[in-house]
Length: 140
Image (tube, rainbow, N blue to C red):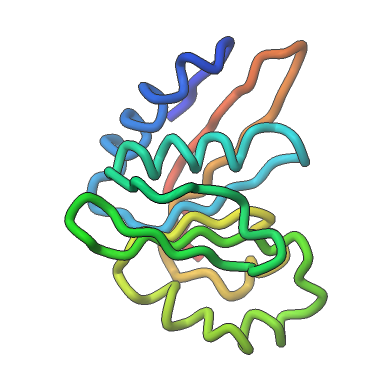
């Protein structure tokens, strides 16, 4: 899946399209430079899932837990401040990653070796103010 995002108003539709493109997948790993819009898109994905909580980057907490419209958990990770893989083990990443719940990860490259066998790799890049989103299944 490839989408060019020229305006922030497109994000709700992009989020719905991304979820619909991978209806059986629950793990979405985001890659992209700082400021490219990873957190903003994750907010829209959560909204599309019916999350009513305040969705924000869990930079200091590493993981935030929200509830979708059915009350199921939705996990949002930000590994930016992670200093070592030991910290991912300390938070019990396996319980989250293999829970079957939606997981959205930012700064995924810091924990890439811990990812499940199958996940949706979402890469966001920016050129001249246009964001390019590319999403595809990755199997390690």
